[in-house]
Image 1: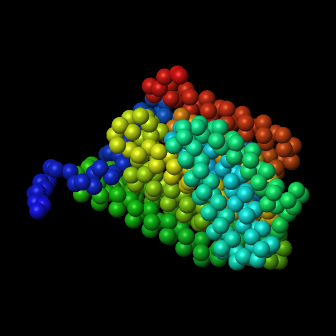
Image 2 (image 1 turned 120 degrees about the horizontal axis):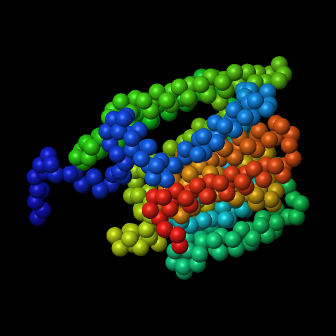
Image 3 (image 1 turned 60 degrees about the vertical axis):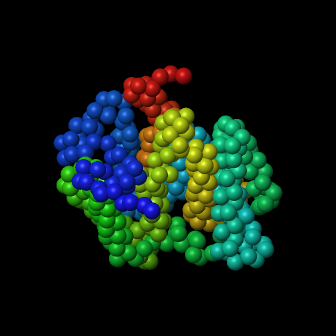
Length: 423
């Protein structure tokens, strides 16, 4: 027989153990003070990436009259979509202090399986696509097994798969082979737009979800006896989303066609990427799985001693990474309109760069999905802007590499300032 013990107002609710601390609580002034203290302590988060993004936008808008046009804005979002998703995928393993060099080619092989099964073997495209995602799941599970169970460094395992999967893609597609993506529903992801009203509906749904999530968090914290931030911060956040989102929707709803056919509306890929960003952020911020990922990245041995099943968390993190990598490859294929044996071969390093440039620590335990998205936008703006200036492709690689080295240096220095020692 169980006896329900009375709960006093001072005793915390059991749900408190599932809450992730949000830093310092209090009003706007308290938040600004705490933020400045983190900056002084070396934890700059996405601040360098945001600053770099602003500088790049101003610079390219001065150098090219086409950069701030409605058409280029839509093109930029389409170009960045696959890199944003891949960067977010890699965050799950980077937070553990691991890496996945095979994520890009994993997506490429998944797309190769999908297109061959559909075009050659005649499988219905939903089933063929499911098999492609299944390959990503199995790849992540395999990496997780060798890393978490066998103890092989993730760099070695994923480098081996990076090399091997390039050969597997050649076997599936064939040397010089190319298959066009003939499925309208998949091509529409990167080639079609929402109706004008659809963009405003998307913004309204974003505001509702953000408000609902914020008030749900406040209710859980109140029930657990944990202090809440000032409610004015919720309304400030909603106002920022409304202003920035409303401005973006307004610009994208303008006619950007170059002929008599009107082209307007938010690209279909935008709400898809935002949905993935929200789900991933929800998992990392509001679930035990997410809390354990941060704990393992901060100190794996301490997490293990606390009862965290480190092996299982690492296993699932690699599964999530590889599965999202297949989705990133699908977005890339949807934009290009074809599948060949080189899909995903070059993008994985850009995905790592996006996460690191955005403020995700290579040492694990620090970073957010939004940081990877911002870093991906920085790299996309560099690629887009240099393309408008018609500079050689080598400049893009040089500048992106320099930005990555700078971001890694900032990460290492901030870690030292915040108390981490050299190894």
